[in-house]
Length: 302
View 1 (tube, one colour):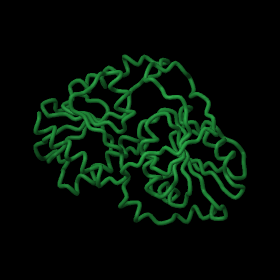
View 2 (cartoon, one colour; view 1 turned 180 degrees about the vertical axis):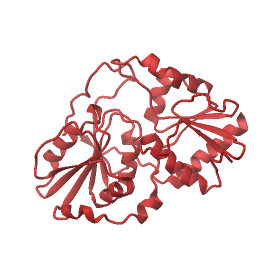
View 3 (cartoon, helix red, strand yellow; view 1 turned 90 degrees about the vertical axis):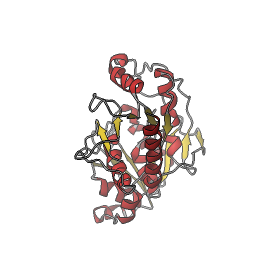
View 4 (cartoon, helix red, strand yellow; view 1 turned 30 degrees about the vertical axis):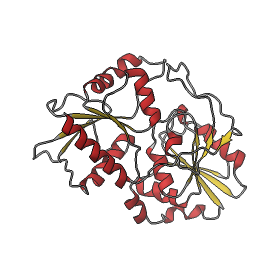
């Protein structure tokens, strides 16, 4: 099977592109190729298609749409919706993601819900980075990581840590453009980290805190969980579906998938904790198998 990837930048480590790199690696183990020198069997379009190779059967990997009323969502979603309507099949990352799209675009006749996975083979080979030795004096390392903006809730991550952590715990904040910075002896801002260093940090950490509002299926949560972290997350969005059975979930009001007319997420009640994480697969081996089976099914029916 030879696959054409559309709307993918393999030089980027942003969420969809990072996942594409992992997916290619594990599909290669199943003798799936991505070779322009041979005839393609299928097009896998990430989020939206730009009409490249329109003669191929197309699967859309759809990990979200625009739903904030502060933007022109109809215009911003127009090509995503067109791709959805033309696709022979659609892959959603979580049930939250699926329900959102069904509400806005209508049901699709051929779809599969496949969570993102983690490169467990790479994680097994990651050494503990000696640059992180300065944190060895702490009993527990808490970590959070994102491309920060207000809906990632960095302030809540920090305040939750300060509220619940022990006096010998520390919080490491990774990622660019943190929008909440405090001067505290147990809170450290380390900026962007390369993938190997970030995975090494996760392997040292006890907790990974991700209180983001309405995230779909964050790769960073999958990686942290695969490294052994206990996940702390919000119930709003798809994160709880991938956080694992041991996750600490903060319950908040469920969104009805309507336009969101807000400039920042609603406040969290940190004490409203439930242990309702859902067990889910984290291995890219199984994820690649699910993709492969859906590819076969869609090609056969197209």
